[in-house]
Image 1: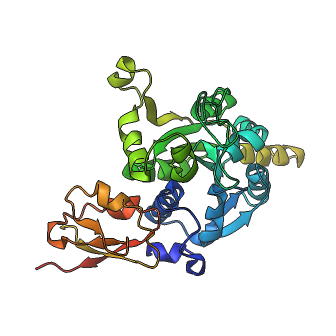
Image 2: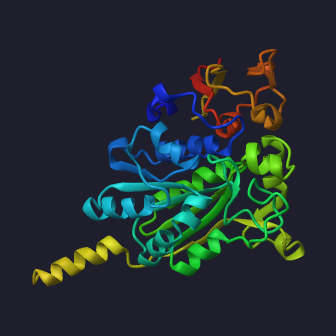
Length: 267
Length: 69
Protein backbone atom coordinates (compact mmCIF):
# COMPACT_ATOMS: atom_id res chain seq x y z
CA UNK A 1 0.00 0.00 0.00
CA UNK A 2 1.07 3.60 -0.44
CA UNK A 3 1.79 5.79 2.58
CA UNK A 4 -1.32 7.83 1.78
CA UNK A 5 -3.48 4.74 2.27
CA UNK A 6 -2.67 4.86 6.00
CA UNK A 7 -3.57 8.56 6.36
CA UNK A 8 -6.92 10.26 6.82
CA UNK A 9 -6.14 12.76 4.09
CA UNK A 10 -9.02 15.05 4.97
CA UNK A 11 -7.08 16.15 8.09
CA UNK A 12 -3.88 16.96 6.19
CA UNK A 13 -1.75 19.06 6.27
CA UNK A 14 -1.41 18.23 9.96
CA UNK A 15 -1.39 20.82 12.77
CA UNK A 16 2.19 20.19 13.92
CA UNK A 17 4.60 23.13 13.59
CA UNK A 18 7.10 23.32 10.72
CA UNK A 19 9.99 20.98 11.55
CA UNK A 20 8.20 19.21 14.42
CA UNK A 21 9.65 15.74 14.95
CA UNK A 22 6.26 14.18 15.60
CA UNK A 23 5.58 14.11 11.85
CA UNK A 24 8.79 12.14 11.31
CA UNK A 25 7.65 9.62 13.94
CA UNK A 26 4.25 9.28 12.23
CA UNK A 27 5.96 8.94 8.85
CA UNK A 28 8.21 6.09 10.00
CA UNK A 29 5.56 4.38 12.10
CA UNK A 30 3.50 4.03 8.90
CA UNK A 31 6.51 2.56 7.11
CA UNK A 32 7.07 0.03 9.91
CA UNK A 33 3.42 -1.09 9.70
CA UNK A 34 3.67 -1.26 5.90
CA UNK A 35 6.88 -3.33 6.01
CA UNK A 36 5.26 -5.77 8.44
CA UNK A 37 2.29 -6.07 6.05
CA UNK A 38 -0.16 -5.66 8.92
CA UNK A 39 -3.77 -5.03 8.04
CA UNK A 40 -5.17 -1.67 9.16
CA UNK A 41 -8.18 -3.44 10.67
CA UNK A 42 -5.90 -5.44 13.00
CA UNK A 43 -4.36 -2.33 14.54
CA UNK A 44 -5.79 -0.15 17.28
CA UNK A 45 -4.06 3.13 18.05
CA UNK A 46 -4.84 4.59 21.48
CA UNK A 47 -3.58 8.03 22.45
CA UNK A 48 -4.00 10.49 25.31
CA UNK A 49 -3.61 14.27 25.11
CA UNK A 50 -0.89 16.50 23.74
CA UNK A 51 0.76 17.28 20.42
CA UNK A 52 1.92 13.67 20.17
CA UNK A 53 -1.57 12.31 20.83
CA UNK A 54 -2.88 13.99 17.68
CA UNK A 55 -1.29 11.21 15.65
CA UNK A 56 -4.29 8.95 16.28
CA UNK A 57 -6.50 11.39 14.40
CA UNK A 58 -4.34 11.29 11.27
CA UNK A 59 -3.93 7.54 10.90
CA UNK A 60 -6.53 5.26 9.37
CA UNK A 61 -6.44 2.43 11.94
CA UNK A 62 -9.04 1.80 14.62
CA UNK A 63 -8.29 4.82 16.81
CA UNK A 64 -9.15 6.03 20.30
CA UNK A 65 -8.25 9.54 21.43
CA UNK A 66 -8.64 9.38 25.19
CA UNK A 67 -7.79 11.22 28.42
CA UNK A 68 -4.50 12.86 29.31
CA UNK A 69 -2.09 10.20 30.59
CA UNK A 70 -4.70 7.44 30.43
CA UNK A 71 -3.96 6.03 26.97
CA UNK A 72 -2.34 2.91 28.47
CA UNK A 73 -5.34 2.31 30.72
CA UNK A 74 -7.74 2.40 27.74
CA UNK A 75 -5.27 0.33 25.70
CA UNK A 76 -5.15 -2.29 28.47
CA UNK A 77 -8.94 -2.55 28.29
CA UNK A 78 -8.92 -2.98 24.51
CA UNK A 79 -6.17 -5.59 24.67
CA UNK A 80 -7.88 -7.60 27.43
CA UNK A 81 -11.13 -7.66 25.42
CA UNK A 82 -9.53 -8.33 22.02
CA UNK A 83 -6.06 -9.82 22.60
CA UNK A 84 -5.67 -10.72 18.92
CA UNK A 85 -5.41 -7.03 17.92
CA UNK A 86 -2.13 -5.10 17.87
CA UNK A 87 -2.25 -2.01 20.02
CA UNK A 88 -0.05 1.03 19.35
CA UNK A 89 0.07 3.70 22.04
CA UNK A 90 1.75 6.95 21.00
CA UNK A 91 2.43 9.27 23.95
CA UNK A 92 4.37 12.39 24.76
CA UNK A 93 6.98 12.53 27.53
CA UNK A 94 4.62 14.42 29.84
CA UNK A 95 1.61 12.29 28.91
CA UNK A 96 3.55 9.06 29.58
CA UNK A 97 5.69 9.89 32.60
CA UNK A 98 3.91 12.70 34.47
CA UNK A 99 0.14 12.55 34.08
CA UNK A 100 0.26 8.88 33.11
CA UNK A 101 3.32 7.88 35.11
CA UNK A 102 1.47 5.36 37.23
CA UNK A 103 -0.25 3.73 34.24
CA UNK A 104 3.13 3.54 32.55
CA UNK A 105 5.00 1.70 35.29
CA UNK A 106 2.14 -0.72 35.90
CA UNK A 107 1.65 -1.56 32.21
CA UNK A 108 5.39 -2.31 32.16
CA UNK A 109 5.17 -4.38 35.35
CA UNK A 110 2.32 -6.48 33.94
CA UNK A 111 4.17 -6.96 30.66
CA UNK A 112 0.91 -6.57 28.73
CA UNK A 113 1.34 -6.82 24.96
CA UNK A 114 1.13 -3.13 23.98
CA UNK A 115 3.58 -0.99 22.00
CA UNK A 116 4.23 2.33 23.73
CA UNK A 117 5.87 4.91 21.46
CA UNK A 118 7.05 7.79 23.63
CA UNK A 119 7.84 10.92 21.66
CA UNK A 120 10.20 12.74 23.95
CA UNK A 121 10.44 16.43 23.06
CA UNK A 122 11.17 17.40 26.69
CA UNK A 123 8.31 19.91 26.97
CA UNK A 124 4.51 20.40 26.90
CA UNK A 125 4.18 21.96 23.46
CA UNK A 126 0.41 22.11 23.02
CA UNK A 127 -0.23 24.14 26.17
CA UNK A 128 2.55 26.65 25.66
CA UNK A 129 5.93 25.21 26.66
CA UNK A 130 5.70 24.19 30.32
CA UNK A 131 8.54 21.99 31.63
CA UNK A 132 7.99 18.24 31.75
CA UNK A 133 9.68 15.44 33.74
CA UNK A 134 12.08 15.11 30.80
CA UNK A 135 13.12 18.77 30.44
CA UNK A 136 16.07 18.31 32.76
CA UNK A 137 17.86 20.46 35.29
CA UNK A 138 18.88 23.91 34.12
CA UNK A 139 16.70 23.85 31.00
CA UNK A 140 14.39 26.78 30.29
CA UNK A 141 10.62 26.55 29.82
CA UNK A 142 7.70 28.97 30.01
CA UNK A 143 7.21 27.87 33.63
CA UNK A 144 10.95 27.83 34.36
CA UNK A 145 12.26 31.10 32.92
CA UNK A 146 15.32 31.05 35.19
CA UNK A 147 16.05 27.38 34.65
CA UNK A 148 14.34 24.19 35.75
CA UNK A 149 15.39 22.74 39.13
CA UNK A 150 13.84 19.29 38.53
CA UNK A 151 16.01 16.30 37.68
CA UNK A 152 14.88 14.40 34.57
CA UNK A 153 13.70 10.82 34.28
CA UNK A 154 15.52 8.42 32.00
CA UNK A 155 12.57 6.81 30.19
CA UNK A 156 14.50 3.71 29.12
CA UNK A 157 15.86 3.10 32.65
CA UNK A 158 12.40 3.67 34.12
CA UNK A 159 10.78 1.22 31.68
CA UNK A 160 13.43 -1.42 32.32
CA UNK A 161 13.18 -1.10 36.11
CA UNK A 162 9.40 -1.34 35.93
CA UNK A 163 9.59 -4.59 33.96
CA UNK A 164 9.07 -3.78 30.26
CA UNK A 165 10.36 -6.69 28.18
CA UNK A 166 11.32 -4.59 25.13
CA UNK A 167 12.98 -1.20 25.62
CA UNK A 168 14.65 0.89 22.92
CA UNK A 169 15.60 4.47 22.15
CA UNK A 170 16.08 6.24 18.84
CA UNK A 171 15.81 9.75 17.39
CA UNK A 172 14.11 11.51 14.49
CA UNK A 173 17.50 11.88 12.79
CA UNK A 174 17.97 8.09 12.72
CA UNK A 175 14.94 7.36 10.53
CA UNK A 176 16.18 4.08 9.07
CA UNK A 177 16.89 2.51 12.47
CA UNK A 178 13.68 4.00 13.85
CA UNK A 179 11.70 1.92 11.34
CA UNK A 180 13.58 -1.28 12.27
CA UNK A 181 13.16 -0.66 16.01
CA UNK A 182 9.44 0.05 15.59
CA UNK A 183 9.00 -3.14 13.57
CA UNK A 184 10.63 -5.19 16.34
CA UNK A 185 8.65 -3.40 19.06
CA UNK A 186 5.34 -4.01 17.27
CA UNK A 187 6.11 -7.72 16.79
CA UNK A 188 7.39 -8.20 20.35
CA UNK A 189 5.06 -10.20 22.60
CA UNK A 190 4.94 -8.16 25.81
CA UNK A 191 5.14 -4.52 26.83
CA UNK A 192 7.40 -2.64 24.40
CA UNK A 193 8.66 0.86 24.97
CA UNK A 194 10.29 2.88 22.21
CA UNK A 195 11.52 6.30 23.30
CA UNK A 196 12.02 8.59 20.33
CA UNK A 197 13.91 11.85 20.86
CA UNK A 198 11.92 14.34 18.80
CA UNK A 199 12.52 18.04 18.29
CA UNK A 200 10.15 20.80 19.40
CA UNK A 201 11.75 23.79 17.68
CA UNK A 202 8.86 26.05 18.67
CA UNK A 203 9.16 25.71 22.46
CA UNK A 204 12.00 23.55 23.76
CA UNK A 205 14.30 24.67 20.94
CA UNK A 206 13.47 28.36 21.13
CA UNK A 207 13.49 28.57 24.95
CA UNK A 208 16.86 26.85 25.10
CA UNK A 209 18.42 28.53 22.05
CA UNK A 210 18.95 25.26 20.23
CA UNK A 211 18.35 26.72 16.78
CA UNK A 212 16.16 25.31 14.04
CA UNK A 213 14.64 21.85 13.65
CA UNK A 214 17.65 21.01 11.45
CA UNK A 215 20.08 22.11 14.20
CA UNK A 216 18.21 20.02 16.77
CA UNK A 217 18.37 16.95 14.52
CA UNK A 218 22.09 17.50 13.97
CA UNK A 219 22.45 17.48 17.76
CA UNK A 220 20.74 14.06 17.83
CA UNK A 221 23.40 12.86 15.39
CA UNK A 222 26.34 14.19 17.41
CA UNK A 223 24.85 13.75 20.90
CA UNK A 224 23.91 10.07 20.70
CA UNK A 225 25.81 6.84 20.22
CA UNK A 226 24.86 3.19 19.64
CA UNK A 227 24.30 1.26 22.87
CA UNK A 228 27.49 -0.32 24.22
CA UNK A 229 29.82 1.81 22.09
CA UNK A 230 33.35 2.82 23.07
CA UNK A 231 32.39 6.47 22.52
CA UNK A 232 30.10 6.36 25.57
CA UNK A 233 33.00 5.33 27.83
CA UNK A 234 35.03 8.30 26.63
CA UNK A 235 32.13 10.77 26.77
CA UNK A 236 29.50 9.86 29.41
CA UNK A 237 27.34 12.79 28.25
CA UNK A 238 26.42 10.93 25.06
CA UNK A 239 22.91 9.45 25.01
CA UNK A 240 22.75 5.78 24.05
CA UNK A 241 20.34 4.63 21.36
CA UNK A 242 19.38 1.17 20.19
CA UNK A 243 17.68 -1.80 21.84
CA UNK A 244 18.38 -2.11 25.58
CA UNK A 245 16.15 -5.05 26.45
CA UNK A 246 14.44 -7.68 24.28
CA UNK A 247 13.33 -10.61 26.42
CA UNK A 248 10.69 -13.28 26.31
CA UNK A 249 8.70 -13.03 29.55
CA UNK A 250 5.18 -14.18 30.56
CA UNK A 251 2.67 -11.85 28.90
CA UNK A 252 -0.36 -10.58 30.81
CA UNK A 253 -3.21 -11.57 28.43
CA UNK A 254 -1.74 -15.05 27.94
CA UNK A 255 -1.44 -15.48 31.70
CA UNK A 256 -5.03 -14.32 32.12
CA UNK A 257 -6.21 -16.89 29.55
CA UNK A 258 -4.45 -19.57 31.59
CA UNK A 259 -6.22 -18.45 34.76
CA UNK A 260 -9.59 -18.62 32.96
CA UNK A 261 -8.80 -22.18 31.82
CA UNK A 262 -7.81 -23.11 35.39
CA UNK A 263 -11.04 -21.65 36.78
CA UNK A 264 -13.05 -23.57 34.17
CA UNK A 265 -11.36 -26.78 35.22
CA UNK A 266 -9.52 -27.28 31.92
CA UNK A 267 -6.15 -28.91 32.48
CA UNK B 1 16.73 -8.56 -9.43
CA UNK B 2 17.87 -4.96 -9.33
CA UNK B 3 15.81 -2.66 -7.16
CA UNK B 4 13.76 -0.29 -9.25
CA UNK B 5 14.59 3.39 -9.06
CA UNK B 6 12.09 5.72 -7.49
CA UNK B 7 11.12 9.19 -8.63
CA UNK B 8 10.27 11.74 -5.95
CA UNK B 9 7.84 14.64 -5.96
CA UNK B 10 6.99 17.29 -3.38
CA UNK B 11 3.40 17.80 -2.34
CA UNK B 12 3.51 21.56 -1.77
CA UNK B 13 0.06 21.54 -0.21
CA UNK B 14 1.48 19.59 2.75
CA UNK B 15 5.06 20.98 2.83
CA UNK B 16 5.66 23.57 5.57
CA UNK B 17 9.14 24.53 4.40
CA UNK B 18 11.10 23.37 7.46
CA UNK B 19 14.16 22.67 5.31
CA UNK B 20 15.01 19.27 6.82
CA UNK B 21 15.14 17.61 3.38
CA UNK B 22 17.33 20.43 2.05
CA UNK B 23 19.79 20.23 4.96
CA UNK B 24 20.20 16.45 5.07
CA UNK B 25 20.15 15.49 1.37
CA UNK B 26 23.63 14.00 0.86
CA UNK B 27 23.75 15.25 -2.75
CA UNK B 28 22.24 18.73 -2.41
CA UNK B 29 19.29 17.86 -4.64
CA UNK B 30 16.70 19.87 -2.72
CA UNK B 31 16.26 23.59 -2.10
CA UNK B 32 13.52 25.91 -0.90
CA UNK B 33 11.80 27.83 -3.68
CA UNK B 34 10.64 31.47 -3.61
CA UNK B 35 7.50 30.47 -1.71
CA UNK B 36 9.64 28.71 0.97
CA UNK B 37 8.52 25.23 -0.07
CA UNK B 38 10.80 22.28 -0.78
CA UNK B 39 11.72 21.78 -4.42
CA UNK B 40 13.78 19.19 -6.27
CA UNK B 41 16.20 21.48 -8.09
CA UNK B 42 18.96 19.05 -9.13
CA UNK B 43 17.09 15.81 -9.94
CA UNK B 44 20.00 14.39 -11.96
CA UNK B 45 22.17 14.30 -8.82
CA UNK B 46 19.64 12.19 -6.85
CA UNK B 47 21.09 8.82 -5.76
CA UNK B 48 17.69 7.50 -4.63
CA UNK B 49 18.67 7.08 -0.96
CA UNK B 50 15.15 8.04 0.10
CA UNK B 51 16.23 9.86 3.28
CA UNK B 52 14.31 13.02 2.35
CA UNK B 53 11.14 10.99 2.25
CA UNK B 54 11.80 9.28 5.60
CA UNK B 55 12.75 12.48 7.42
CA UNK B 56 9.95 14.67 6.06
CA UNK B 57 7.76 15.66 9.05
CA UNK B 58 4.94 16.72 6.71
CA UNK B 59 4.84 13.47 4.69
CA UNK B 60 5.11 15.82 1.73
CA UNK B 61 7.77 13.93 -0.23
CA UNK B 62 6.28 11.08 -2.19
CA UNK B 63 7.81 8.58 -4.56
CA UNK B 64 6.87 6.06 -7.21
CA UNK B 65 8.80 3.35 -8.99
CA UNK B 66 10.03 4.23 -12.45
CA UNK B 67 11.32 2.10 -15.30
CA UNK B 68 14.96 2.78 -16.03
CA UNK B 69 16.48 1.98 -19.42
